Length: 395
Image 1 (tube, rainbow, N blue to C red):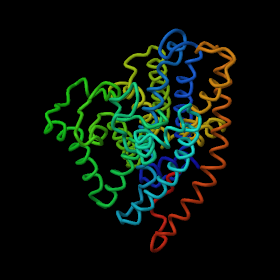
Image 2: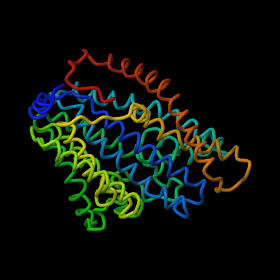
Image 3: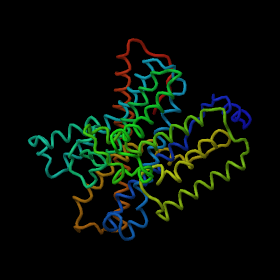
Image 4: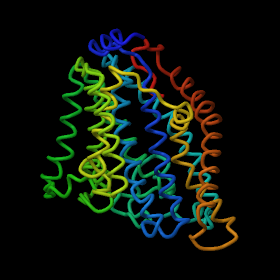
């Protein structure tokens, strides 16, 4: 497509160009989390050379996922007409995309545990597993990070509790048709500001960092409200705002300026990672560099080409499986380790990454493109009539 046509389509909001750079960012985000967990092979988490090299990866990878999630949900539902069918299609596509991979990952996690039998006979363990299966934070779940409001059995899945909450409120807002965004932002204000205030938990400047591990521990009697009122949700909201701006008529026409801005935000994110400055979950933490990064990239894509290596797009395609299954790879290698202890060196890191990618590729082709797609088609047929293609595929 010629540049004038690209700019014209961007201005009237009709551009349908693939956003491969978003997939690339997903792949990078997953890789950052994998490297963070692999850093245990260079010493205990957060210490020594492993902490210095990969200590920023976990927070920055997760926060980038949340930002992209908000953006993608807006981008793929721009043509929604507010009907219940559009909301149902969105919910079905999200559920069929997430749940099968999550179930497989949970099963593998339970089977790999030395106390696997306890999940059959121990009521507490059964409850923990059930909460994990349905993405509900488990009260009293055994974890060193209890304030994140109940780690599931597979620890990295705590982010899916937030993702499913995002999907729920997003699908509900779609039902309000042209008042969709009024309803969405009213809910965010009510849960992030008003509800904590009414409960006597005034949101402070420290909370706006959105710390999942230590900030905003409201401790509501209804456990799920701890998740809904956590400022970590603002990362998702930031992604939504970026999606709305990307889909609007606003655009920067100067390609040179856009290229300079792309370079600047990339350098900013790399510097925050390297310096470990304000590293942690939230818009006021990792979001300081990642928010502008996604915003500038999205706006630049409306005017200039954003070439991405094919291997990085491929990594992004299987990023969900990579994120969920890499702890399984870590557990396998630890169980097979000849020398006990965390310090196995760079060879172990490379081996874990290779095994993680192999498991993710298998999951992507067999489960995501096989079982998930089959389940999606089956569930869509449950609708009274196949809705018009007004709600784009959510991938």
